[in-house]
Image: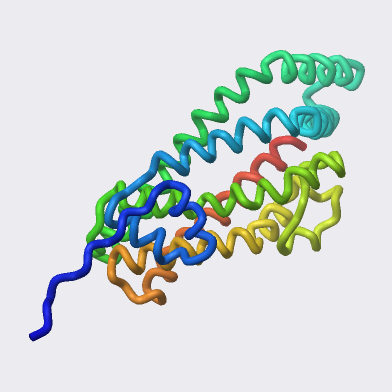
Length: 244
């Protein structure tokens, strides 16, 4: 006589969950569904944010200064004889309030983290009628973000060596370096190896949670991702038009 009882999922420690995400992701995702953990990835993301802000401070400030100067120089509302002064003042303020910017960055990261999980949860629940809790979805979303941390570990040393924030691992490499702040670059840079890896983990995780087919889960995840891509490109185009 067959038993209908499912075997309990073996509990995994934090180290095992992180390692297995990259080796056998289904094991980590199964553990997260049984016992959600949204705090660990958030802590790791914050730590990566702090490390990046420290290691790339000069590179980030240099590129922000260039972007600020380009924007001011293109602004027809500022008299030509005052533009250099505006640039100097803006760059000085940026460096002076660097710590404040990092604090704001923390808030933005937290908001996007919680919001991303919420959007996935509401879409899965209301559009595809899946059954799962917000914390389960948030945990899957959070752990998928560890792929971004791996990307950072690989890219940050290259950024430091080349003194640039731009290191492409996708279609963004097709765009010239002087076109980095254009809608075209923003669009193509989204089609990235690490992004596809993260999307794959989300698709697998949600299909396991909701007991959907991977095709159904992929339709949800990729659909939401494409909306995010279009919004990113749209905001960039708006900023470009306003800046000059």
